[in-house]
Image 1 (cartoon, one colour):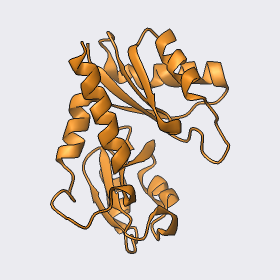
Image 2 (cartoon, helix red, strand yellow; image 1 turned 60 degrees about the vertical axis):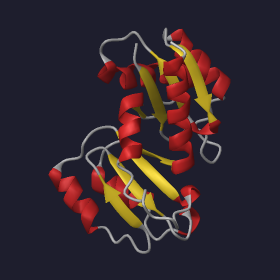
Image 3 (spheres, one colour; image 1 turned 90 degrees about the vertical axis):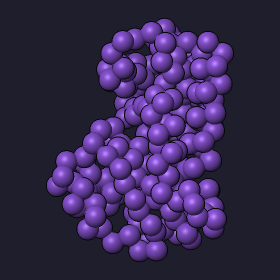
Length: 185
């Protein structure tokens, strides 16, 4: 039974698209997922599933959220093994001066087109450092996300695919939760 980390985009941001985490957890349980746990108020759910078609899960969850809460956020997921890979590929791992609260991973729903990658490479990143793999962006904001020269909307316009970001502290905590759930099986 795979352990999945589900990341919702645009939930509980600036008073919009509100979902209480206990209600989100209950919704996931109603979909017959087990071990459902949420982390912080931004739409992170760790769970196990017996579903064989893992790629169909985001749409199934999106539809359920729309029925229950009246809006449809993008849902992006990674298995625990995939999240371990995200952490292993950290391009900043050997640098001592990286503040994890200023380091963000952008999770893409799927691999962008070569044209979108070219547009992303052409964006002026200012002081921010951007590295990307086929399904993740690693962005370091040395002056903090609030003072960033790189705008999330410019990334959205370049990629034209669902994308959601989590800071490094959240990414590592979600993996720890997933691994604890895996070991409890």
